[in-house]
Image 1 (cartoon, chains in turn red, cyan):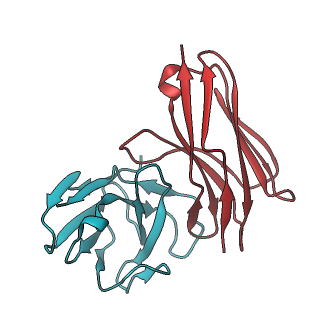
Image 2: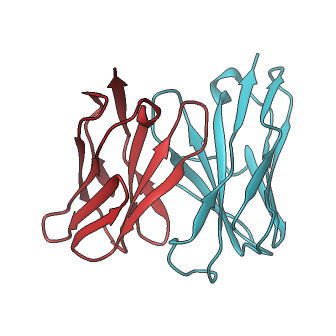
Length: 107
Length: 119
């Protein structure tokens, strides 16, 4: 089966940095996605890692270690609009999602 | 771009009735579409994988006779919730795969979701 774990909630201050960890144990692996989801909306794509290492895209970066079954999403220079749920999803020709991490950004 | 639409965006129906939700890929052809369900404060759970012109593949625990999926064209898949009950109230999200059928789901684009409330 698929087991994908991420923290339930995180709180940070505007302008700060937050790191959301995701660990996974899955039967197959063809990459890992990070999505952002605002309440009542569909997920929007943030990043995709298939090889080990860090992928940087503006204020968001994502890291993957396949040997450790571990990834993290790094959000820098937090803004109020970054308050959302962040979903880690493992790609095995279909997506298996973690439960999501709700990030609250405070002024 | 890759735009996926869903209709309706929200629906309220009475217990025992059926509801159809449409998922359309507007600017690309999708050989594969996925249907997810999301309960409040929970993550997306894959219900079924739908390939154009063939029967959908349902995930374990999803009743295929209750959740009817039709993928009649490369741009349209429908999910019909038959004999809906209050416990079926949820957020239903579709996604469309832009790549080759059976290929990795890298290029998967989500629709805006449909909020179903069964009274």
